[in-house]
Amino acid sequence: MNIAKNTVVSIRYELRNSDGEVLENSEDAVSYLHGGYDGIFPTVEEALQGKAVGEVCEITLEPDHAFGEYDADLVRIEPRNQFPDDKLEVGMQFEGASDGEDEWILYTVTDVTDDKVVVDGNHPLAGQRLLFKCEVTEVRPATEDEIAHEHAHGEHGHQH
Image (cartoon, rainbow, N blue to C red):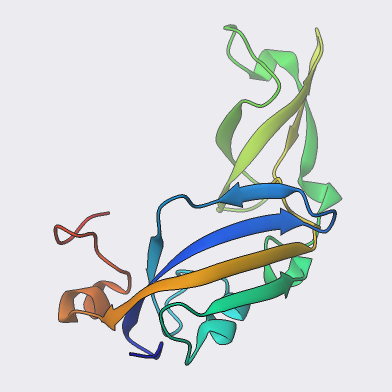
């Protein structure tokens, strides 16, 4: 069976930066519902269209087709007293509203001093060109429930 709209596709993948450093890989296959349901980067989905089990794809993802360009406006310096008294460390993450927006985004603490905290709302891979390599491990027709819910379900039915 070839990959087409409303098929559930399982892949093993490896994600590298432009220097060739492995950023992430899947030991186990991951699955998504193919056909414009936002379960995978659209550029990857386009490259996989028509492929079959065993085929390999290598795709270069420019920042605007992956995690976006780096946005300096998402870096904020906040007073330390705006944060809880317990231990605050670089790398901690929390959700917060972006300036003047109703949208909540994930911020990462990038620096802590006695009186200030620097937080960054960019994805850690924002602004980076990425190399995505994957192998198709399974293709099957999607169930009616998967199509209705617009995502692949696990082996044992509906899982979120």
